[in-house]
Image (cartoon, rainbow, N blue to C red; front, top):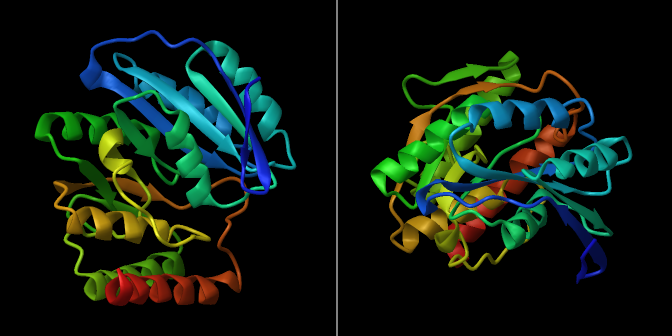
Length: 258
């Protein structure tokens, strides 16, 4: 299993052989995980069903989960459609996505969560829209007409208000600035020079803000968001207050310092 050093940690990589189809349909779905044994195999199966007809791979980037997630993704990697990255001594969704993009073989990449809040059946919708429109980024939005936002009351109101405030500060045209559910051209993603480390999904604001400033073509499409049904949320309890602080601080940093 090939390995490479990443800052203070190590990343090991295993993958099956991937058949190549027409370039416009080469898709890499990148999924960061931490303790997702209750979701990841179901998600991979659902994605595999949704992406029939595409040339696709699923890149799972695991941050040294303490449950059975590592062994599950290693087993899934034997199928030839799943790549398993194991990170030791490194944590964070943003760096996990960067590592996933590093090994992705598709012309288009899709980033999404592992908890089914981003429905796998919407991945082909994002990709087809990106191919059809030629847009550099197609973002899933919880706030467009036609979207569905299924979550406890506080989990709907809080993100709605925070999103509106961060979007106002940044002047971003797309309607959901930290959904974390996008299809984009890999070559365009690699052109973005990210400046700030991220703890949660605040990297998404930097992605969209810098992409807009660089003149990337972007559009958003509605999707049905459903709050996590299994596993443990990474932003639960008292973390909500810190969550708001982190996102607002990042929005101000980007606005003032770029």
